[in-house]
Image (tube, rainbow, N blue to C red):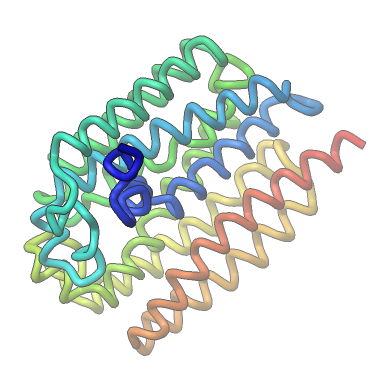
Length: 296
């Protein structure tokens, strides 16, 4: 009886992969930074833990639905062909059950442990990513990651709402930073995975407009990002430490984008993509340290 009830070898791992844990971790990290910035001192630990759990659960649910909707596309891409949905080792009913369980639990945690505003904002983010981006935008327009990037940019606002029960202008500045960061981050990946997206029939920018056009847009968006990251200092949301960090991190990102524009290689595109993740994490960490220093 025990062996019959035991999970299949690797099944839990397959479920975990469907929730895209690395992407979820970055999203939750940005939400947690929003929680810390929303209050003058330390946030309420119980509410912070509940908000973190609830946001993580709903993000994981959205990613699982994304994998289900894109199972045929994933099967044609080398990067995603090993996902359980692409291989058919996990059924649609199982994915829907997983997503329903995670999403329902997340909404309950946010409603009862945090506040209704955070629950509804997080649910709207779920719909934005799993439905509007995945179903409507991604297969139809090369600007999918630009338009759909708003849902991925929402975590700081969710964290802020969790602590303050409001989403003021400062929270939307953080959302704007991630919104502008998303295209150069993703297009760096799309460049060295260009053939994958072509095989899948997805209209990503390198597929529809070519490599050089995409490299130019990465450069332009990185310039816009550098300017956008100065807003927290401009509106006196942060101090000199953040300003120095934003300039230093942004100039390195810009150097990657410039080199990518001048002379392309897959290896440089990979390094640019990896740096973009580190860049966002360090930028938000600098915001947090600066915030605490201003309280001393």
